[in-house]
Length: 209
Image (cartoon, rainbow, N blue to C red):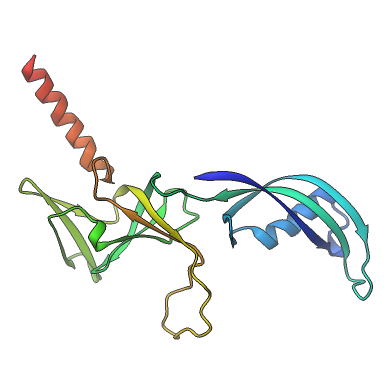
């Protein structure tokens, strides 16, 4: 889910940062440039370290900053297809579920309706008029997916949508990286589903001994 990636970039350090140690100043600039940004390698969540710094020159026509060539490593959120990840339910509608990571730094995780365990149904949420909720039905017992749930999902796809040229005023915020997941397999879905199942299986094993 997380990996270290090494990058190289040309960094402009403004005079107001020159009172700091050089690496601290460069790290601040790198954080502004990369932190919470989606790159081709994934979502940058942290500047891990600075490997090397070269230069320190003022470019012609750019007297407002000193330029350095920096080699550095970043921590990247880059899930892989087939990986099982823990997330927290965020919202749902007739199209499926939306979740965010339990650490809270990424929320563009979607579970489309076909990837919710069946049989199921989608119904108005009696506690939230603006939202629908999903119910999984298993052996006559109904399991509700709501905002109190921690969910295990398996990654089915990671996409990097192109930035649209035009967007409607009421459009949702653009997501530069989208993770599509499934709950439709053993051990996936609400953690509470499987905790209860383990207790039942243990009781059955005791009865058989």
